[in-house]
Image 1 (cartoon, rainbow, N blue to C red):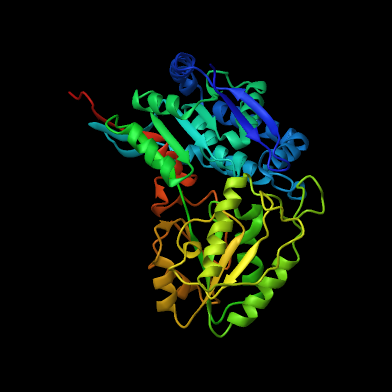
Image 2 (image 1 turned 90 degrees about the vertical axis):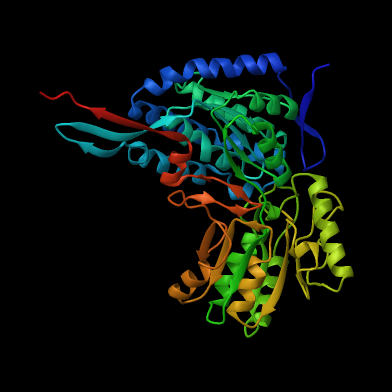
Length: 460
């Protein structure tokens, strides 16, 4: 019997979309077609590849009126926020702009006797496994530079956002990217693991859970396939005594609650200098009390349901455990909270690191806030985590922020901002957040391999 992938809408629990998974044989055949198409794609001039990719990006933008409500139905983000095309286009455009630089040979010598240089070679077929929380932006992080670099791409998208990969592939094909060059495949976990273990891909890029990343690494063990992993996070914010409290509260609480807290680099714990703690807390509570929880298809809704009931259950469990252990909740239950996917956003104080809500990834609209006395105390707390994606520092002192940033175990240090992905900077993490890096010039280096040329010229 053919397995069917089903997208369950968090709006009402109905089946919004379903697609049959490919058989192992059909999946292998699709990868074989991608492998066969890669050499010809890589042989095209760089400018031609860039032009086709950017036409595909623009075509996705033309679909935005359909994409925005479709996203709301699939994963619950309110339509008032307008989808992801701005970031989708920004990231692809930047990678197109720096492609010539990122893929340029490193010239060592071109003399009368030797020509020595290092070129960038595409890996071949790149498998991109994309998550549901920002399904277009996370996918384009890999799709655009992989194609521009001369790889062919197989995209496996999350079941929760089942139609995103299909829509992206259709857009790219409509503008002239060959079908075998960019394929969206509906695969189950077992078939995916077997393809990786069979060394079907030159590189695998995965964004998702820690357990998912471990599964990818196990499948790739012994194949020497390159693997890039962006996994869990528990990103901290630190508000110092010289910070702009209103700006810090606005940004950090938005970073904690936007997209129902389902952001890779969302703020999950906040440390505030004791002199500002009461003021910060009051502003944070005021912000959250102003949210409207409800149907994401309604323009008035500012916070929608979590993407799946089981995600909300985890957040409720972490919150309830913390309260039972002495934490203080500051937000009364919203009228729209149905005990299922629709979840009241919550702010907790009197928390500590013995509580799961301050230690394990929540990936939902809850944040714990703790007072601290010093930079040293804040640093110890920020580093007391299994994860390291981003950290947000709030101060007027750039040198202080850079000095503290050098001591934080993280992939990105923000000052006076949070929850933003700058395509000019490498998006990377450490500890259980994973390894590798996407976007920026380094992103091109990860999606290609170096090849050295040592050419001795014949001389008389």
